Image (cartoon, rainbow, N blue to C red):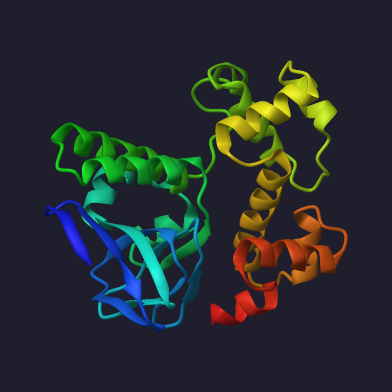
Length: 282
């Protein structure tokens, strides 16, 4: 691990290299810190006392344990790149803990010393933008570093709080500030249990279907159908961690009426089927 920015409040690091065979890339004791892992390249595994998180390219993980535990980052053979952000409890509590009831329950309980906080998913626009800012900041530019820290706080506000519904601006007022592609993707995420209806989606953002398809591909690099698959599997990963939910129930929740089709989509995004993914976590 190369720590390129270390203070009492925040540590920013980068793991990069070439593994000739699978093995341990890094190990650290858990110091009541929330770790954000942005897996940019290569395949690996985060290994805690009980937790197992596979990291495929384009995935992120958030881990925060209790003193005395250890986290290991195992890597498979090949090139790898991982951005790591270590956020101490004190730093997070000062900035995010003034309204604990608005926090994500798991994160709030971690701040109060009641439980660990661990979750993972596919990198969305928030994580990708943060990775871009961290890359610029590694050059040593002080302005880029300030922008990266600001973007990190924005990320924390988006990922570690409950989704806001009726506070502040109305949804319509916020919606007007977002570009066409952002509006389309937001609507796509809001109805994961439904098939992609390109005509209806295009009407909702005031574009012709072919224009919307082309614009999404140009701005994001992937199609609407691939966005939908990624959103669905990211939500599925979150739901699979909920006790009592079966794979079939999760598949239906995220819009797959066929279990084989769900397993195929899951393998395409995560590199393994849902049952294997669950086994790796335990």
